Image 1 (cartoon, chains in turn brown, green):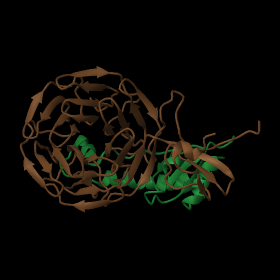
Image 2 (image 1 turned 30 degrees about the horizontal axis):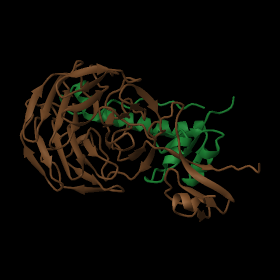
Image 3 (image 1 turned 60 degrees about the horizontal axis):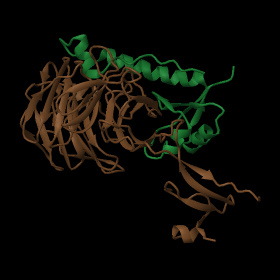
Image 4 (image 1 turned 180 degrees about the horizontal axis):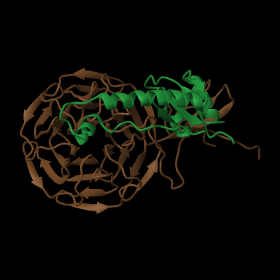
Length: 330
Length: 105
């Protein structure tokens, strides 16, 4: 008869209680409870992994109407409005997986800007607003250390959404409400086909300037509309379950997360490439927030509820549970 | 009538305040004033309150804290004006005026 070690190459771990940082399928003996245990994945009735938000460490500065991008291990937050009175800020912070650190500022302070980027080593900040009526076309490139002015958008605007990376990005929608779409090739912006539903204050997900998803927004009034981008045109697909604006987005065109929004809510919806489903809400609901990552590991930061907040939460789309192995004497 | 929720006051210290497993097992809702709403008569919620050192409040006590915070935020919003700023521009600058919040039993 084969033993556990024969099959898995290691003996069963003997632990007083449960080991830290278990992974799916890990098996051990809890000598305190005298039970064999293993970690399993939490799934819903459809067999989809259940995700949830956990609290994490705060930004150094509470802000809203900022931009951000990245992952749970490497992210960037830039610009926005701070107290008192929504004062414009150029502050930039980097996330290293456990804490935020203040780094070099944007060249132009602004709110309602958009951004794109893979992590804290690269990024692009574009558009934005400064009272009473300045709508920026400024674009700045982040090299991991400083922001540098690069070629401007064709149309100055704010409250749109950014998709992609520092070398392949989209700027979509705006306030005043438009459906304008511009594509960044690493050097210049080019105007392409508009959204089917003009709007601002929307959220998005996507890999680059050839693939993206936008959802929700203000046209005026919150909307449920979702559109997908194939590099040339926008096509309307299935709606969000709840109309929302000034929310966050992360992921790709086929696996996305919508989170937060106004009035301050923690409502979270998961896009599986075809439909939206409501999943576990954020622990602290808020509007005007930023985020980055994927549907399996994401980060949300800043916002207002109703005061500006520095709160950070981490999304894990692979919920787990520790189960006890039961045996019979048959 | 049996309560659906219980309330406590606890300051969110960041990582570990609510972990992933707790977030799956418990539905958390936060309110101004570090007020947290979690399910009543729930073992996991009770363990979480103990873990974070939460101070349990009745619904009425929690409502008083939340209302004070919202009133202060609404007053600050009303008093934060810039000359020649339109109503729409004010919302664009500050976000919408904070809404009243009514807690439920």
